[in-house]
Length: 513
Ligand SMILES: Nc1nc2c(c(=O)[nH]1)N[C@H]1C(S)=C(S)[C@@H](COP(=O)(O)O)O[C@H]1N2
Ligand SMILES: [Mo]
Image (cartoon, rainbow, N blue to C red; front, side, top):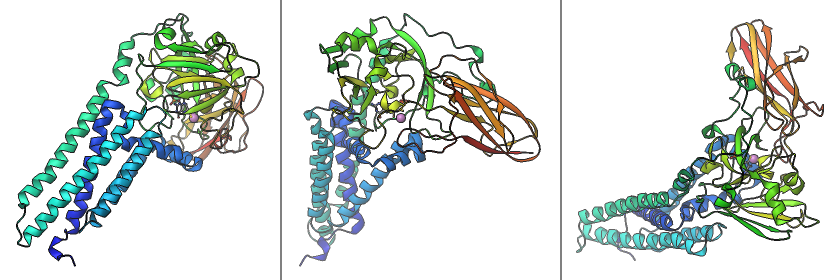
């Protein structure tokens, strides 16, 4: 039988588990600073979790938490890790073995998650291995110390209380230094400095200036061009991929006459074009905000594909990002000179922001982002639909996903209170690559009334609208619907976002007083 004095108090044991976790994660983060910030085991496990999450849950997370979905995931992971580590500590009040087993299991999960990342080489596993070894060493060491102290309290020779506390504090301080060090190292090598060094991208052909009456921002619509910091962001990347322009290249291969590889300077030195495009996410719900407009600067995708020479029978442009995300676009859309598909390197007068795909991304007007807009793009494979299935296609989303004709009310906002009398209703409509022809608005059970449209910038961008109603006190409802250039009226049939984009009319309720 064990002597009772050799058992650790439960809270001391729990603390040991948490300290070992802290040290392990910090060590991994530090080593990842030398390799790649994405080799940090914590981030790699989170990224792995995102890729393994079923579509329905992922769609829910994006809807429920929006851009914060990743913060929610990281926080949830932290809570689980701390709880399990504390539990493993408590299970190790006598022998360190249960704790060591749990640490080994965690460490191996980290190793697998890093090894599975397509953007990292094999050396990257040194980061999770550092976590694994540090976790084991710290736990074993602190455990021995704490048990000898417990014995000392029972009268046997052993370390002082002070030395045990110092050891614990030393682990916390060491982990702090390692964690911060890893962060600084990653920062020094990162893409932000590379982006800052790019300088101004001057298009040979600039987009026509946006007329002043292209938006009704004074009436509550968004500004016509979305500032980069406000541009919606949707991707599966838990930490933004860090690609330096100097290290980037784009491979064009597959069903082509000759494989090509472009470096950043090759693209930059070409005559650049600028195009104003409204991008939309297929996860945008009726009334949602996953859409934005920017001036994109880049080169014609069709030019790059033609230089490689397309072989007969090719159907799909299968593009991959540095972190292994993939997208499949109809090759015909990428080649169509009237479509204006681009390899973009600039956005609103700056190099692409890191979150929006620096150094380069695809932009194909008229198609939802998941079938067209690969960020951090490094590989273009010309292929068939049978040969390759892209990321979201495998998860139940449609192969063909043109953006649907839709409209949205921005003002009043749902459940606003406004003064009775004249009410101005304003919003946006979009039917990218087809163009918006008309928007109609309806108050309560009234008839459809035409809205005033903003100046059209081009068929690939949103269009703003407004209409005026006189309302008495009470609750009212407004609804809008758009008609595109083909004469198709936006359907009132409600459909969810899966598999190819939501439909239905946007209605809001407001109170007049
Ligand atoms: N590498 C990568 N590119 C990606 C995605 C992604 O998850 N990873 N998401 C796509 C989706 S679903 C959309 S809607 C657009 C969003 O681009 P933005 O974040 O610049 O607005 O990027 C597309 N490109
Ligand atoms: Mo999307």
